[in-house]
Amino acid sequence: MDTYLETERMVLRRFTADDADILIELDSDPAVMRYLSGGVPTEPEVVRERYLPNILAGYEKWGGDLGLFAAHEKDGGAFIGWFILRPEPEGPLDEVELGYRLRQAAWGRGYATEGSRGLLGKAFTKLGVRMVWAETMTVNAGSRNIMEKLGMTHTETIPTPPDMETIEGSEHGGVRYEITKEQWEQR
Image (cartoon, rainbow, N blue to C red):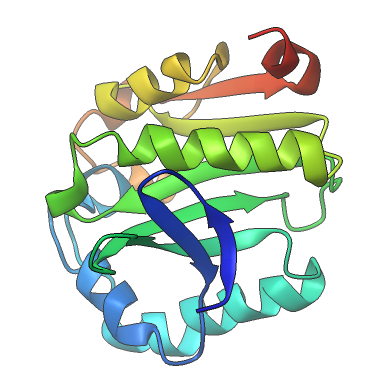
C-alpha cells in the first residue's frame, strides 16, 4: 500500500485504477449521499469513466501531495471512505479544500476528525499551505461540528448550487469554514 498519511487508527493512501468498486459502493448508500445528491447514488459508469480518472489525474497535477485519498482501518484494513485535500482546479496551491466521505459503518467513531486533523497537520507543516477551507450544507450539523472541533471558523454563508436545490435543507444554503496556518499553530 502506498501510504500517504498514517493516523492513530487509519492509513490514507492514493487511489489506484483498481479502486472503482469501493468508490461505487460508497456512493451507492443513500445515507452517505444525503447532503450531496439527495440520496441518489452515483452511476457506476460515472465513477469509472469520470471520477476515478479525475482523481488519478489530480495526483499527476499536484505531484501526489494533494488530491483524494482512500482511508483504511489499520486494524483489519477495512475501507472507511475518503479524505480530500486539494486546491480549486485553477486555484493557488497554498489554499486547499478539506473534506471527507465515509461509509456509514465508520460514522460516529471519530474517523472524520482524526483524518482531518492529520491532513491539517500535513498541510501546514509539510505542504506549504497557508489556509484550509471546507464547505457543507447549513443543515449538515455533523460536518459542521467536525469543522468546529478542528478549530475552523465559519466565514460565510454560501448559496446552494443549482444542481443541489432539490436536496432536503437546501433552502438554508451552505456554509464555508476556514483555518489559517497561524490559527492552527495557536491551537
